[in-house]
Length: 129
Image (tube, rainbow, N blue to C red; front, side):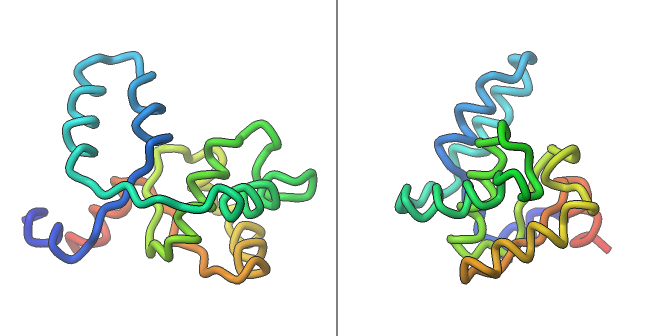
């Protein structure tokens, strides 16, 4: 069933995601994730664009903590690429409904459309309904 939906979406990842995945403590999970992510596209972005939006998301008044550079970069890249969804397991900072309005506002102020931020489980539940 999921295979039929796979053709509807174009999966994008980044080198940062691959590096982050390799640091996971369970080697079996790392192998499974890397095998899946190897089939995805890794587009090149202008670092200056990503940095500008990432910095705005982490400003003292931004929705993400200043130390969350990787999360902010993931979110900035997804917005710049025009991704409809950002799938994340991070419910503390990214898939947090209390940060959503501020995230959307900052991204729109920079001229981009904010992706819908969901966990992989939420995404699968929504498409399989």
